[in-house]
Amino acid sequence: MSRRKRIILASAGLLALAFIALGVWVYRLNKTIAESLSNRRFIPPVEFYSAPQRYFRGQKLKRAALEKSLQRLRFRERQSGQVLNPGDYTVWHQEECANMLAGALPDGVERCVAFRNRERESVRSDLQIVAFGTEETIFEILSGNPPAPALSTQLEPELFAQFVGIEPMLKLAVDLGDAPPLCLNAILAIEDSTFLEHQGISLRAIGRAVLSNLTSFRVRQGGSTITQQLVK
Image (cartoon, rainbow, N blue to C red; front, top):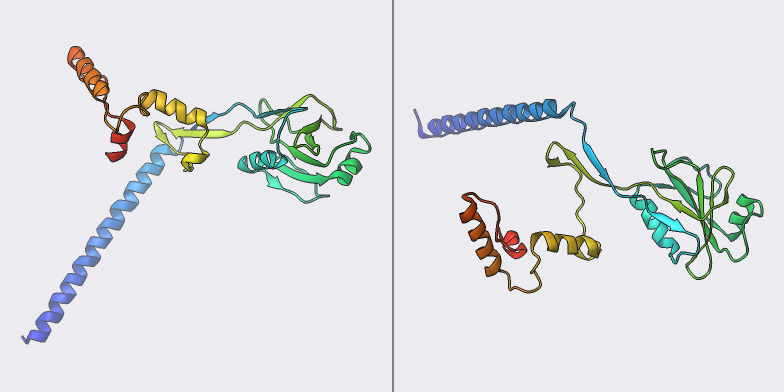
C-alpha cells in the first residue's frame, strides 16, 4: 500500500472517530437536558416581590423617575389617544390632561402620567393619573373609573428574586453604582462588617472562625473577607 493511501485511510479513520465522539457528546447532552427539564417541569418557582412603590400628593419627584420605574416594571408606553390596558402607561401634555379629565385638573399642572396596573391581589387595575407641576413635584393624584382626587397611588410589586428549589432563576447584573446603598450596606454587614477597615485580609475574622470551628468540632464559620471571596 502506498504512503498516500495510508495517509488517506488514517485521516478517514480519525474523522470517523471525531464524528463518533461528537455523536456521543450530543446524545449525552440531549439526555442531560431532557432529564433536567423533566425533573423541574412540575416545580413552580418561588417568587419574591418588593412592597409596592407608593407616591403621594406633594411629593418631590421627577417625572422621568416615575417613567423609569414603569419601564423597569415592563409597562408598555402608549401614544396619546390610545386605549390604556393593564400594563400600559402614557404621558399627556397640559392640554391633553385637561381634555381627558374634563376640567377636573387644577391649575399649575404641566404634564400627567397615566397608567393602569396589572390586576393583582393587592393592586387594582383602575386608571391612575399622576399630575406634575413646574417644580418637579406631584401636583395632584387621581385614581379610579372615573378618576377622582386621591392622596396617593402605587405601582405593582416588583419581582426581585425567583427560585426553583434552591437554584436562583432570576438574575440581573447591575453596575455597582446603580445598586441601592441600603443593599450594599446590608451585604457588608452580613458578609464582611469590617470591609472598610482591613486591607483585604481580616486576621480577627480568621481567628474567630478558627476558634469557633475548633470548639464546636465542625465547620461553623468562615473567616474570608469579600476581597478573598472575589479572588477565589
